[in-house]
Length: 586
View 1 (cartoon, rainbow, N blue to C red):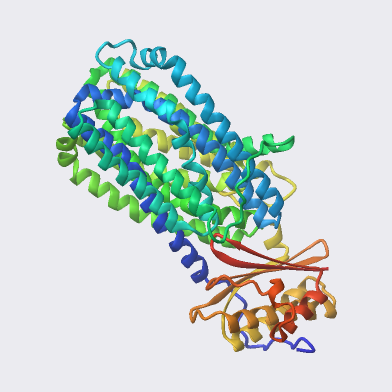
View 2: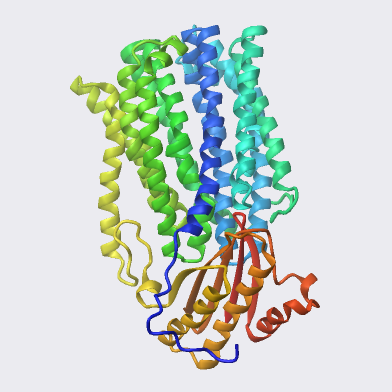
């Protein structure tokens, strides 16, 4: 191609198809749902089998010990989630070295924190159990035994988080599902062995949880560092500003776990006062069912967080919006199915746990799933979009503040106490509407969208364009020609416009020739910022890097070498299992 042809007058505009992102979303969300469902089988197994082989006091002890598990999860999730968020953004900005540093830092900190939990379990299990059980003689020994095992086995729990968060970033979503099946399925089998056969009581239930978690962690870490991988297995500690960056990025996950812990303590205290061990046992069952429903309310948003983080790092608002719409659509369908199952299955759940009076609490839980899903989608987006403070406010409001307000109001009014599950979520959505309206009006320097607070300056100024193209020569040639309209609108010189078109056509044509996938398509973003034009090309199919050194002397790649000589920088990455090329032209 020696010159750029003018686009035909009747040529359709360049548009972004949802098919590419729909495929990426489905490849991530199905394993994500399976992963959450499988992992939360551990809670179901503990609750059902403890209820049958230990009794109501056993279920109450598991519920009263929940803060211990939540605090351990808080630290594991805080470190891994924060590091994954920073790594995703770094990869979106082509900062591989920074991504490796943050990965190594969270591994080192995870090891250190695990050792501290183990020391605490050795020294303070008895006084901790007394505090959690309120000194109740029936449950205190059970709480002590259950919580001690979790503290002493903290490494097994904490090291499930790095592969859980980083495998999706590598595109190894199915391996996350296998991890969670190992954890959930292993827990059930070991529960049957330790409780039914060996009669080990709550200690056996705790051992089943931590052994299955340890096996899951070993498998996940092995897969993460086997075959194609972006991160080396090295230990380090954060340096300087990295501490603050890690704390900010991981704070939403940490706040969620921290206030879930406070929530469990608060709700258990209120219910223990009003209804004794029966209401605490009912809440333990409701919490277990809420955990199962998290396969949808948390699993759907979180399964695509890695993808969303990369696009936010690129400031690619159109692609981020497509992903968020897919999250909402799939989540609503999943919540409806979960709600029907919970309500229809309430008699079976009560029989399985040997706990009565579960219908109305489960109806309220079912009604709360939809607003909780919306809030989880919002907080997940704000976390990767560098609005951690807003995410933290919404998490704390729903999980604890409005939970406490609702409980106190309903208790004093003599109303139906279980309605707090719905009211806390609705009040948080109202707070979100108020806060986003205020933040949008306050921002004077850049145009923000009303609800998500996206910076729309690039789209409104015409500095970026997203489009999709089938992998056939005619479509590639047409896209290469029509990109001239974008270049002209950004006042590019003819020579620069020619380089943009040539780079697009050569790269996409060669990738098509070497990729056997007949359904291959391209997702392309072209942007112009401060005199630099960037072209980002994403494509599925086999892992294929046309910039690899092994092709440097291959005559078939002469066009690629010519493009590399004409542009300032070319970078290949594989993110969330998708090939990605970035070309920068000044």
